[in-house]
Image 1 (cartoon, rainbow, N blue to C red):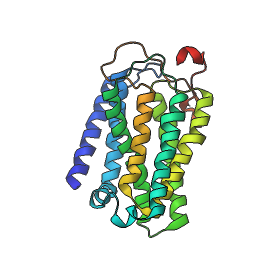
Image 2: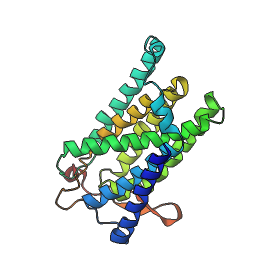
Image 3: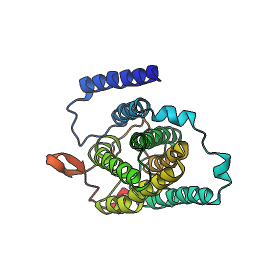
Length: 257
């Protein structure tokens, strides 16, 4: 595991140095697929470094996906199905219908690959917050609250001040940002974290996020790194300390679908 931590950390640092030499100072209103993928891969390296260095990956690999006792427990089955069903409704139905694509093409193979890695990386780093708090001996509500707060801060700052500006092409409106936040993102973390607190299934928790983010990648029609054309960069507005964060598209929504 130490070798893996060193390897993924080295890859991330090398890619970051290359990025800073080639793309530092690129205007925020220019969005190009290969650069977006480059940024995303650096982020994936950071996430996987955290997942491995925190001991979360080791626990994930040493733990069964589920136990015989769990799959014979109707409460476990109900909660598991409920989490997947909610994630399906939130991301495969609601999220998809409220997402702008600006006539971008589908690249299903690369979209699935990207969403798979994004889901593992994001789900894994959120799982790492739970894993680290659990090492303190906390259980129940205190563990839930501290884990949820940590996950919320991470997701808010990464998603709003990095991902939705420098990685994803424009795919939201001010209205859809609010609806997705309160109908998809916040409940998804709250519900799936409850499953983790009660049942402690690391692999299933990550699978929830992989399903959600594969859907997000496909339905925003995330361009392949070789895609050509002009792509609508995310619109921004000043946020905390004047930093740019995602504002959502404010033009003609019908023309942007």
